Length: 143
Length: 148
Image (cartoon, rainbow over all chains, first blue to last red; front, side, top):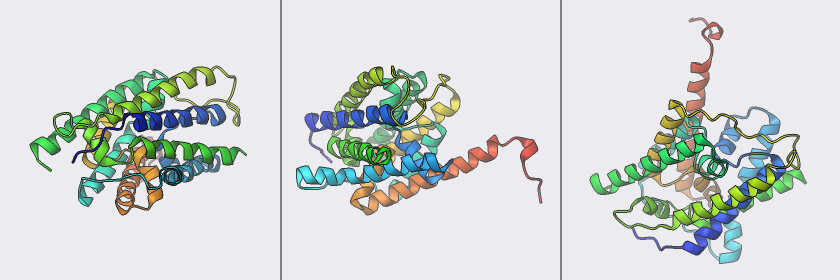
């Protein structure tokens, strides 16, 4: 399925993501990683750690509605995969980000910005396996 | 104040995700489909996010401490080990299958979309299963409960 190329919206959205990461470091001294935020809510190590992550999560969920205020519609969410594959993908993402200590935001944005060798290695690895998976699914299996 | 600002930072992130297209699996998967319906937009998301964070961290991490905490809490390990690479590899396979990464899916939860709820439920199950597994494996033998 074709999607339209949106360089300006994507660049601006990316800059807002970066601004959020910088502000979280400035005020709370933390890496902005979606994995750590969700995991810290599901499996809290203490009340203090739970609180800031729960607030981040609640704020994140308001994001599409801020988008709605400015754009008059909710952001487009089109899921090409079947519900079964989506569940399988979700479970594998959960296993992978827990073993690998982070995802696109923690490693791919904050870690790269810190020039962390672990994050650079993780980001290169997951970009390659994501690309390989999409290639196999679309051009080999034809799903 | 601390809580309100943390909530607003989450909202800023979620708005960025919504605007960038990262909450849309069709768009994310097309970034990786160079030999098909390629959409290079994701590169602009990464470029914008990494550039702002890189420059911002240069300024912020020079300070003695964060605004509301006593110290910065950033990872110090620089060791690239098998667990990191296997985890990143498995994450990528899951991302390629479903098209959602955690940062894209969590803000999308706010729309109430059933498919997002399916993904985040499965994601949560994967996180919890792995944490349980790791807590058992990492537990020293002497502390394991004796077999019944």
